Length: 321
Image 1 (tube, rainbow, N blue to C red):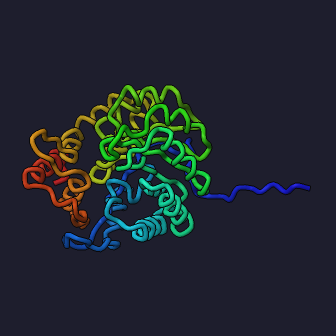
Image 2: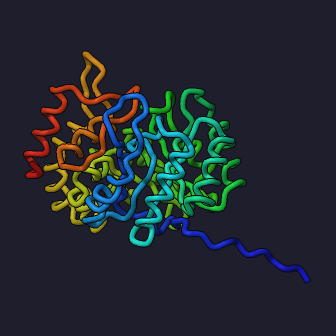
Image 3: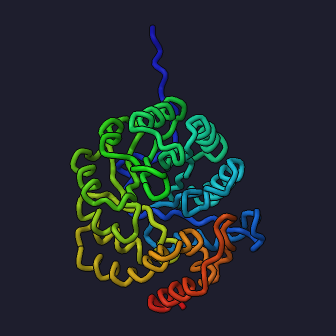
């Protein structure tokens, strides 16, 4: 008699559960020492409680907003484990554990599953080495062979020195049982619309990765949003997403309009000079709200006084200061 091996039960999100507003949590640091300040574990509770005091559906730990660029694998796993230990029973915890090296992703994801007990992985497409579409396909398929959990693809061309995850790649991956969705931060609405058209629930969910486009993407058929601004204004960001998913677009647009100055302040654009990126901006906003997250590790630094002024003005406009 052949005994079928049943898959091990995990806490991995399904595509159906990948719906709503998720917040890409900032990683708090203890001091303003510039080279390698320690992660401030005492700031996790006030930060996460602030985020969860709303209708968000989950938290991403150690993604781009979580300063993944400057955190060692040991630190990423320890941070994710701590957040999941404290809050995993109350909300969905997703590990940001992508890399530009396939074997490194596999090792990190396996540790997230074994040590942090997190089985939903947000994996940015490889950066710097600029793989071909076939290289991207091979990258993600190889990862699925070596982990138990599920993957959310993460396409953000502005941070990955290329085109991000193209439509051709999604066509090859979206029906794989362990690849449940994509965080789309390309800003290319035509491409996103095509992704939504060729994929479908319950196999695959397209989520916005851009605060300013979340409402538009949900109206096109997106299933939710992974947000930076949700660190600062979690209730308002969740309202935009939840109203839009409920097709109450008037209320969604009202809240979204209020948030636009915050979007602009957290993601400043300046054609003449290189502005401070997120998470530097998000860290300033959180400090102004009284949440001690410090300043990101080098090569990121604190915002300029001008940028701080824009962030403070947005917070005052929202009634937060």
